[in-house]
Length: 280
Image 1 (tube, one colour):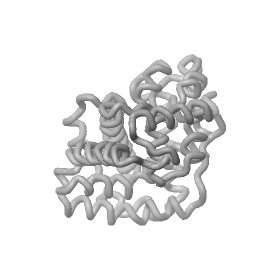
Image 2 (cartoon, rainbow, N blue to C red):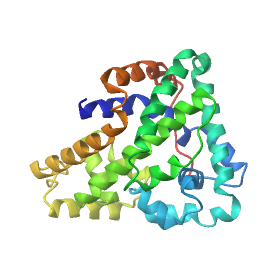
Image 3 (spheres, rainbow, N blue to C red):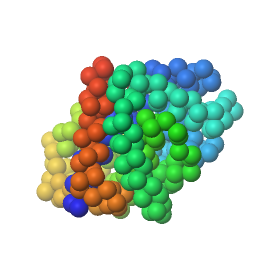
Image 4 (tube, one colour):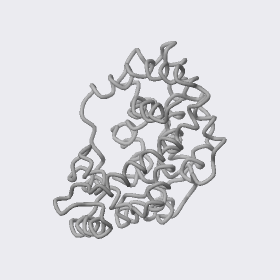
C-alpha cells in the first residue's frame, strides 16, 4: 500500500466524523447539560481522557489559542461528568448524521462500511504509543448501531492520524499557531478561517509568521521558501506513513471499497448546508 491511500481514505470519511463539531444537534445536547458555546467542543472531545485539565487539552488539541481553551474548560467538570457528555455526544452524532443522510443511514452499505472502518480502527489500537488523545478514545466501548460504529471508527482513525500529525510537527519545531500559518501558506484554507476558528489574535499570528521567517520557512510575502515547502511535505509524509498502519489490514481494495461506500454519506452531509462553529 502507498501512504497516500491513508490520506485519501481519511478525507473521504472525515465529514462523517467531523459533523458532530458543527451540528446544532450537538450544541443543543451539550447545552441541555449546562455546557454552552465552545466549551461543548473542547469538553466533549477531551472527555474520552476523563476530567482533564485545560493544559491537557492545550497539549493534545495543539493549535488552539490557550486562552480560548482555558475559558472553555474553566469549571466544566463541575457542571457535567465526562460520561454524561460522551453519551450526549454519541446521541447527537447519530441524530446529526441521520438528519442529513436520511434513508442512507440504515442500509447494508453502511453496515459493510462500519465493519471495514472498525477493522482499521482496531488495528490502530495496536499502535497506542505516543498518541494520547487517540488512546483516550480507544478506551470507549463500541456502539451497537452500525451507523455509530462507522462514526466511532472514523473518530478513532481521525484522532490516530491527528496525534501522529502533531508529533511530526513537534519534531519539526512547529508550534500550534505556526502550524496554522503553514496551513494558510499552503493555500488550502484562508488565514481568516484558521485564525478565527482557533481564536488567535493578530499579534500572535504575526509573531508566528515572523518566527517562521526567522527559521527560513516563509518568504517576506508569506509564501513558503524551499526549506518551508520541504518541511511541510516532510510533516505530511510522516503523517501519511504513520496513519497507514491502521489501514494495512484492509489493503488497497478494502480502502477503495470503504471510500466507495462512504462517498454517498459524505456528499449528503456536505450538500445539507454550510456548517458553522458555536459561538466562543
